[in-house]
Structures are given as C-alpha cells and as structure tokens.
Image (tube, rainbow, N blue to C red):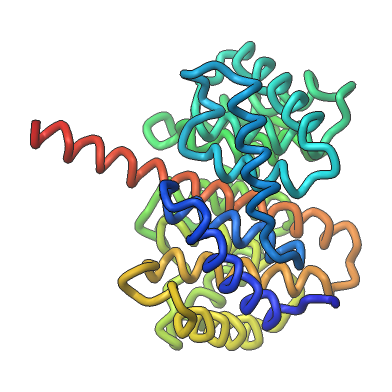
Length: 329
C-alpha cells in the first residue's frame, strides 16, 4: 500500500499509541518522533526492532556516552529502519569521533549530525563532509556568536553534505537572514530558516514566498512562524505547490491529528502538533513533485529538520526540568 498524507496521519497516530504502551519510561516527545519516522516510511512501528537497536547502542557505548542521552530512543528508531543497524551505528560512531576531532562539542545534536552524515555520504567522503560542516558552523558563529550553538550542528551537517561553496553558502545564509530577521521574533530560528532555504532556493523571491505563506497560514490562525516550526515553513515555501493549497492541507492535517487519541491539547502542544502536521504534508508533496533533484534534497531535509527540532524541544524541556530540580533542592 502506498501511503499518502491522510493515510500517514492515521498511521502516525496509531504508531504513537503503540510505542506509548511499549516504552513507558521514555520521553513522550522522543516516542512521538519514533512514531513519525516510521509513518514517514509508510510502516507500522516495530517496537521489538527499536528495543533491539536500543540494546545495541548500550552494548556499543560506555555508561556515560552521549549516544545514551536524550535522543537514544530516536537513534534506535532510525537504526531499526535501516537494513543493517550494526553497520550504521558503527559508521555513525566513526563520524561522531571525526566531528569531535574538529572540536565540535559532544551533545545529542552531534550524535544526530553524525548519523545524518554517516547515512547520507560515502565513507571515503566523511572527512570532507566533516570539514565542511565545521566550516559552515564557524561561518555562522562568526556572524551570530550568541545564538549559534550546538543546536546548529544538524543544520551545519545538512549544509556540509551539499555541493555549496562554504564561503558563498554562508554569505547567502546571511543575506536571507538579513531579509527576514525583521519579520520574526526568534532570531535563532530565523538563522535555521535561512539555512534551510539555502538548500533549495536561487533568488530573493523565495523570501517573499515565505512571508506570503506565513500570512496565508495566519489568516487560518495557523502560526507556523514560531521557534520550533519556522524551519519547516522554509521547506514548505520551497515546494512548487500553490500557497493556498499548502495552507488548506496544513489546516486539515492539524485538525485530523488533534482529534486523534493522545494528541489532545493537554498531551501535545500546538507547535509540536504543527511540526508533525507540516512534516507529513511536506513529505506527501515531495513524493508527488516531479523535480527529482529538488524532491530528493527536500525529502531528506524534512526528516532531518523534524529530528533537529524535536531534539531542540527535548533539550529545552530537559534544561528546564534540571533548573526546576536545582532550585527546589
């Protein structure tokens, strides 16, 4: 069966219920991400395969390894979707060491960046991609020191995997950032938006399209321009689909998910719900668009961005929980 957007929404909701019962001790956001990753592949979630990959991570790493951090279950889900989880984990750990070798700091974000590079490039090109990743990160850090951090590692890796010249690419990111920074409140997310747009745009008209899409969504009371969803707005704007169609489909997907068990307002925030709805709609579009190069780039980017934004949400929740615990002790 070929899963379309509507089918994937149903599959995602079902997957979320299955994994919720199986991994009771895990973060709810992490479980929903695993459910989404399987749904995007048109598959019913395989909790036993995820459990085996989670055990594989533990067997392959030390007790204090970052691989056992907040994103461990998400990584296990990604590994379980691969043909050979053991090989993929080995290559991911190899890239992780290379990234640490260029002085990027150990973190959940670095683990995911390593996985992205390991699964989307040849082993012979790892060092080149890692060097480019560091160059893109340094370029962003030089321009925006205070809000370029570990959460940018994944976006830097995505850029490192492209053929973009690191200097010209960084300058283009800055140009787009300058065009859009006055339009959105969260400056860090504007940088992420600019990074995403560089993956598929060619001229300044795409910035206008982002703003038109934002305003069209706002008319429907859909705010896809907040901290965690802004990069997805960029992906949607890059797709050759009518803006009214995008807005309509996002609204329908949001309403459909909200009505599902486990997706009520007390369980899932509006921003997380929109992140899921937009990602499923966007992936559905990429499967129907005939531009092969653009489709391949954006299809891969959608998954990477969702993982990156979920990781950022989980990191924020963990930080606030730790702060609350510290203040009460």
